[in-house]
Image (cartoon, rainbow, N blue to C red):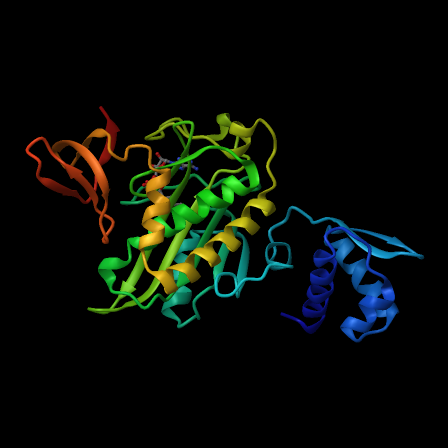
Length: 328
Ligand code: BT5
């Protein structure tokens, strides 16, 4: 980042902290240690980038609105992020943010870096499936982490990303979110987000994990491909109004950062509990199909390795590693 950009960021931080209130030019110039003329120049620069900043001689400046474009400044300014979002990379178009974040992981990039793209030409789902990623409407991001955990515990981070994304959506829209085991978020029974987590590990220790999140924000019904496996939706379709991508992305960074800090301190238990609260089938009888076999049982929870736990008709505990869960 250039020195000018860093200074403008500090200025933005101050304006953001003002929560839309006035801050005098004198106070800004004192705090930032630059002249009032320099402040004015930076304000002009920010305006050109799409920030709406009001200026009045007697009162100073106030921030009215941020641009909707995904940039490091719009995503992180004024946020108290500890690990997640320490570095944010925003790309106009890429093949897959998961591929980009994995490449950074292989190069030794520090944890916390997040790669966002406005669109993806080869967005990945699980098992070779693809993720529909048109420009200007949704969020596609991948977070690189280096948790001090064993590879078999890495699925816990899928639950972490689902819980964080559900909280972020709730904070912005108040829409009712449910999780679908193991990796989807649903609103009113339709898929609004999918997670794809990938990792590199030595025998006992995770090297890096990439948490990929695709979240449909303003996508319209007619933009979805016709051959979807499950009905899909977006926040805007459910809320009946446009939803700010930036607002959702900022909440996502904040919730991921908080959830990761909690996970490092308290382990999987609180994440598991939060996830189960969002899972509608706890204690219910379900049918799980997949890999040629169908299992029926009552859902009792999820295991440390992400397996779904059922109690079957014989009272035996069954661990399900993959499959589609349907209520009976
Ligand atoms: C997933 O896979 O749900 C994981 C999706 C992860 C996407 C993110 S975007 C950022 C990061 N970079 C990547 O390259 N990927 C991650 P899966 O459960 O396999 O679901 C894939 C299936 O969902 C597809 O086969 C379609 O049927 C359906 N689908 C595709 N695009 C969709 C969309 N935008 N919204 C809802 N459903 C979609």
